[in-house]
Image (cartoon, rainbow, N blue to C red; front, top):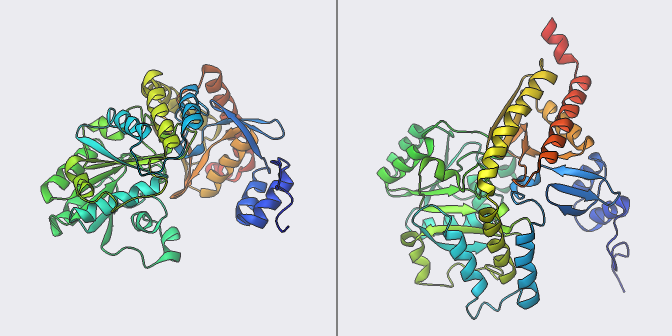
Amino acid sequence: MPGNTALDNTPVTDGGRVAAAYRRSMSSGRARLAEVLGGHVEVESSGAWLTTAEGHRFLNVGGYGVFITGARHPTVVREVERQLRAHPIGTRIFLDPAAARAAELLTSVTPPGLERVHFSGSGTEAVEAAIKLARLNGRHRLVSMTGGYHGKTMGALSLTARETFQRPFRPLLPDVEHVPFGDAAALAEVLGRHPGEACVVVEPVQGEGGVVIPPPGYLRAVRAACTEHGALLVVDEVQTGLGRLGAWWGCDAEGVSPDVLLSGKALGGAVLPVAATVATQEVFGVLDRDPILHTSTFSAAPIAMAAVSGAVLAIREDGLVERAAALGARLTPELERIVAARLPHHPCEVRGAGLLIGIEFADPAMAADLFMALVTHGVIANLSLNSDHVVRLTPPATMTDSDVAFLFERFERAAVTVAERNPEYEVLADA
């Protein structure tokens, strides 16, 4: 019988065999990247920690924003296990109580006026649903921000303003414009040219753009410009929402209610992939008239809905929004101190909002070096997809004091390693 024998019967955790299977059946490029990072095979996770097949433990402050609740939070696991035993996947013919409960829990914590939900499997699908809602509401022109990241499916990619990702797949959607992030006047100028025709998609803080924090009042000004010119406002909170910035949503900090809000990543409680497009009654109403106009086989799957309910309950009951704010206020200044002390001659800036923290270097090679050094010293971080100058940290809000102490110690070790490997900056500084 044909087939691969390496992984046919039971999971194999040997790094070489797993990498070989990736090369045969998945992505050889992904296998090469893993080898550069040490060839580790991850097999277990709990809280802020990841364990490899070899028994090495890593503090996970990466994960692209998924782990605000930490891995395998007991509330999320309880909800998912209960649903798994009863009814994990629905027929999509009858009504499902797990979906109804998840939607009500989610809308109980969204900004005012956002009352209707379409669930999907990923953030980029949530963006696609928002684009379709915009068109159904007569807004066929899309406006997003330079440096913004909204996914890589064809519609979402049209909004993700990075040449590297767009070039191989053109032509993309027509009538898309990009304006500078943080510049509300530039946005208003574009909207003024297309009254009543535009849909604006914006992040409260650009995560993949390199933790770019806009000036105070920016989101309020964006809301005002959209209202003035009849534009639909979509706020992409796939990475920033559910407590990541120290508030339930980045919108909350400025008292802004968008027409559509996008959620994902942490929405599945770090147990299952799920996302959501949450809209006002007025915007969503066009789908009420035809419930099969925008559908997906696994949209609102009961087991995913259990994860959503578990995530919202865990964040609310454990006070993780408040904890994210407090931890962020503790982490960012100390990381800034370490960088200043250990890399004094290396141009670098540390910035953060809640538990979304970026360390930006003038030289992208330095960012890559810090990322690698962190892995070597037992810490998982991320490089920013839209900014290769920035190492990004998205720690869980469940981190303990000992976890925080470990992060500071290992981050300092990594900074020392980077300084030792890159003495040319110090030479130039002394010249």
